[in-house]
Length: 284
Image (cartoon, rainbow, N blue to C red):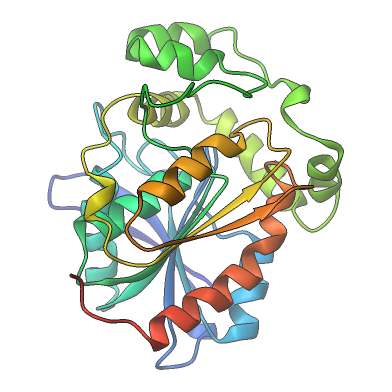
């Protein structure tokens, strides 16, 4: 059973949060899930099934302007850490792991950077790297218009949103198969998020294409980077760059997966997080 809560933050905003504590063991690992862009933040059935099978407690939430959470104009990626700290404090959680897919990946890393004494491990699936001139950040993206507009600022990204449409070339056959199978709830949730308006996605993209507000070097926890070789939304180059610039990283490369089909690795990635918790050491 999942409990839904509206949490009131110190700055007056509210966040819609979800907690599966009722289905978890008393001393279970807690995973804070960071959703993709756009999604509502409601926990998806494949994630709940995987955590329940492992006795893991799953906490998720809607980032600002998603799923009933308040807007937060001008937010950067790092701001997610403060929001998550207030969520876990309200739930009585001391230490936890973070896990994010696609647009959630950077926010999972932010928690580890800003909350080093509390985060035991991070999983980043199909997540983008910080905006950098070190490589062609847009190369290999089937549809890069939104991020290119975001790099020019929020007004430019908002104008782009007025005519933006999903490009089916962004997904490979394995992605569509996943969306017709176990991950069908992801597609339905993304539609619900989009129907509520573009602000969450606009602010995500602007945050990704701007300074993130933290250094990757500050991420002391072990990080698992999971990447599909055929991903046309976030191509492999960012994953490789992330793995090389994080202090303690492991890269799982799946050559035949795309942006959605890579989510089949979530259960195994959760097992990896359980193992990290068992051997967790204090931040350096």
